[in-house]
Image (cartoon, rainbow, N blue to C red; front, side, top):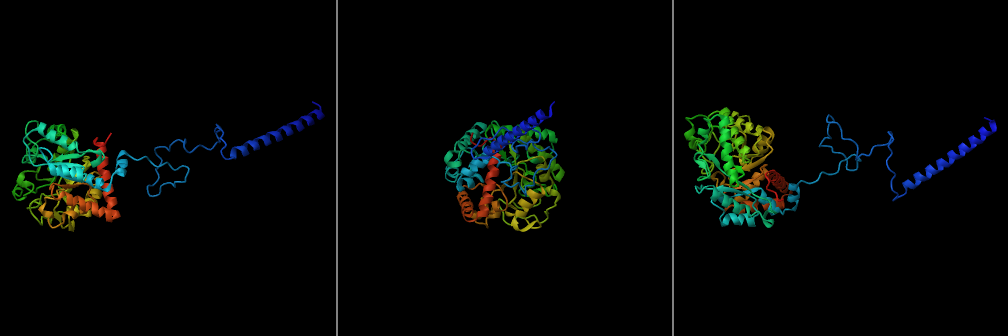
Length: 432
């Protein structure tokens, strides 16, 4: 090839390169102008990946610490997670409706009376306990529960259904009787059954409850009575044969079997009365100054409750008694040490903590009704049980007033109401 031709070609090539460079520069400038559509992403291996399409980290990668989440301005920061249905409902509720979700009021087992209906409508109470005893049978109870369910209106609860509970332990403590309900043996007799047989029997008893609309059973009793000789002196438990046995192991094995049988039928069991009433000699329902001075935070009699938590129970009831070696200043139902320290932290329980009855209990007669529910929630409880309809408005008003004036307490009410709504979501009680 001649030298002159080569130089000419070189000049032409250089000129072409300059033109190409100018064109590229112009394209870049235009691309950076506001409102100019972006070019399609390059498929080159050296291109910076789009953070919204980057593959997720491998399962072995450690998640970010909850204490130091990514900055909202970080390009890799995920968008805020969408609210759950329970959170959306809570955000739409008035304070009065939120307080209604963290209370349970009584209704006659045969059907709601005017006082129950007033609580459901005017106070927005979102949960009902079937009280008393009926021998009318399943059809009658189902009709009464249907009346209760019909009160879950948009005005009262934004359409959120009620948890309906009762006491169906067996023996002398069986509220629902008659056609459609088995005659249940006492817990002491249940304790003589093989645990697998007891679970199957409890499954049948649970089906009977579910068939009439009851979704929470305030049983089993997991209090350990020290001996058969002491039982008659243990007025709340042993006197009525409500114990499964006289050792923590026996109580745990049979109590857990009972709870699992209920769960098999879709009914939430509620172990009680944490941390235990097996050693006391008076009943908190009818007496004052009921205390167990022997119970400690590491007591062997706590084992049945721990086993129930390990088995996955979603409800737990707290005793009204005093345990001076644990908290000398507060009855268990008002004790952050019992509720948050022992039940939440020591046992790791994450479900609904319901009080024993705060209205009819003689043990709490020294406390104003306006303070009973609010003190329980402030201590870390979730749902206040009030079986005296005449006192329910005062308990409800006390919670509303404290939440209105105390922002920290208002947050505790919100947290409890959200826990109840989330549990109702799992139970199919939220509006569709």
